[in-house]
Image (cartoon, rainbow, N blue to C red; front, side, top):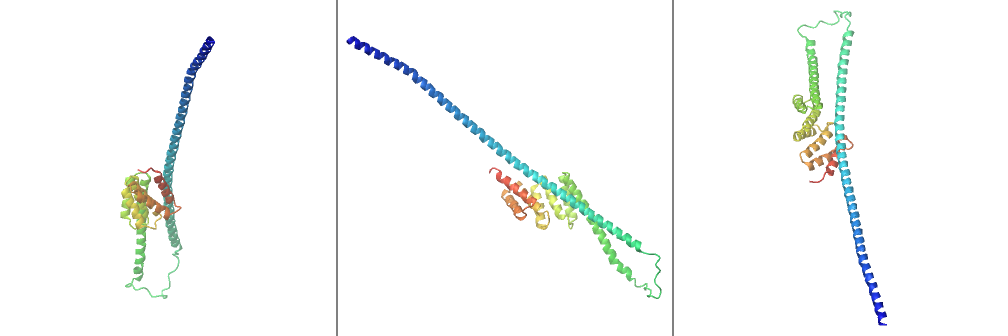
Length: 290
């Protein structure tokens, strides 16, 4: 009986040892599986983080491209505006030239017609119709002097206008050719020599453009402001006000420049200058704060 119990106890102890040995193998395997699962999870998280970083970088790149595109659009609109101004100026000059040429031609035609209507065969009036004019009172000659003076004054004004137009055209030609130093000098001379010319407001505007193109923003702003104060009815006022705002921004007077651009949009809505002012304001708002 004792032997049987001893055998049973030995058998049970053997089974317990076997189970313990098996557990020793199972537990490391589960731990290894847990470690592998944790590594997989970390790898997945790293991949997700990397994907998120790539997505953020892509968004930043898209935003940067959009900002560059807006800047390019603003520059294109400004160039189109300048080209349109140049075209309008050329059309105005051509129209003025045609008008002056038409006046000259019509004047020459009328003079020729009057000369042709004079008939040398018409007999002189009879002697008894009126008494002869006394030689001591040459009234017709005296009466002809004011008319001759007026004609001479008219010819002098026409010559002055032609000279002024030629000087203005020469300065504008230098501006279009990119010779801003010569154009600024020529426009200054024009302003000094022809202060009564109807082209004077435009001369001040293009003088400002000449200085603005060479980054001389302070002097450019002074020329534009002179146009605004002295010629408020000029068609160049919206463009001059726009360039005052541009000059203020370039001179780091950002708040004043923004205020000027807002005034352009408020006073001249729907104009090309107002559109450019709004575009510049949007670009300023898109810039990061320093």
